[in-house]
Amino acid sequence: QALSAGDSTLQLSYNGAVLASMCCGLVTEALAAGAASRTFAVLWGLCQLVRCAGIGFLSPENWQLMFTFVFFDKLTGPLGSAAMDTALLALIRRDGGGHAPSSWRRVPANAMWTLRYPAELLQRTSCQMLLLRTGGNMPVWVSMSFTTLSVAFVLHTLRPGAMGDVKKLN
Image (cartoon, rainbow, N blue to C red):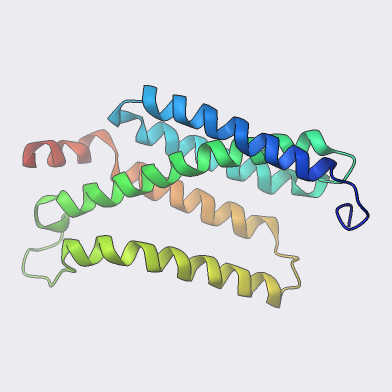
């Protein structure tokens, strides 16, 4: 509404936050070691949970909150994606695909990695259709539940005991 009225404060705030977060992201990723994936997953999850809880406070007058949300989303988003990719690679590299009997059929590692991107697109489209169906009034607990579940799976996959299996294979 504010943009259609000619107020560009939110757009400038958004663009400034994206630029600042990308610069900080470059430094963060360059300084981080390979073991930082768990930390990145937690930071991404916390960012998402705070955004879910604070989305109701966004308004054209509150451009500082918009800047903060966009900055931390753009900073932690790629870090969270990298953590999820690391978790998927850990699953692919594990001997026999985990604790299941080796006689079970498994999806080949190349297929799992290739299906990652279409799954992300399908997930985004499904969420958008669900939001359209509910009129954009999705309960906050839905987003928080999905975020918590995603972070829990990444942390479980990258737990120190499980990562030892990967190091033996390399």
